[in-house]
Image (cartoon, rainbow, N blue to C red; front, side, top):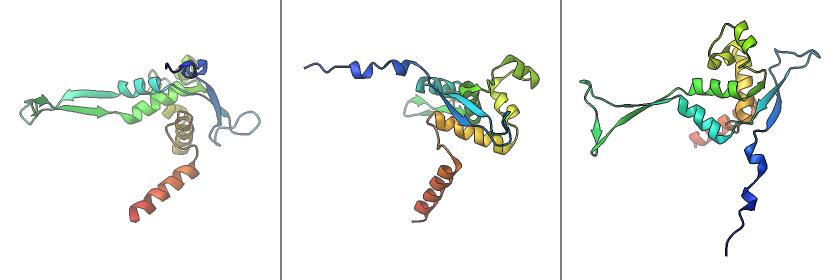
Length: 161
């Protein structure tokens, strides 16, 4: 008996949806309330592609420059720039503010979108807030500080036991 696959042919899986989240308190809109961030929910494939772009793989070598071999195979050294990958995800996911906007980039005299999150949200609080809400929208982190603190407290309690 052949099982029906129509349940897996969902049109919404082909589209990236957009969600809204309040921005940092330090950036008020015209009404005096924090601006609303517009966040594009990136696909798992897009997130993986961004992460892969910041991963390099080189042959591991000893002090003399000879390649290291283990069990008959060359050993590879993998380096990741997770911070730059995260900034790239933030720049890709934010629809408003559009960190890839040419005028905004020109205002900050910036040519690399991975630098834009640090420039547009220069304080630690602003950046942490934006990073937290974007990563939560992408399914890569908790939605708010209370969840982060709660999870950290639970981890510490488990470690003590």
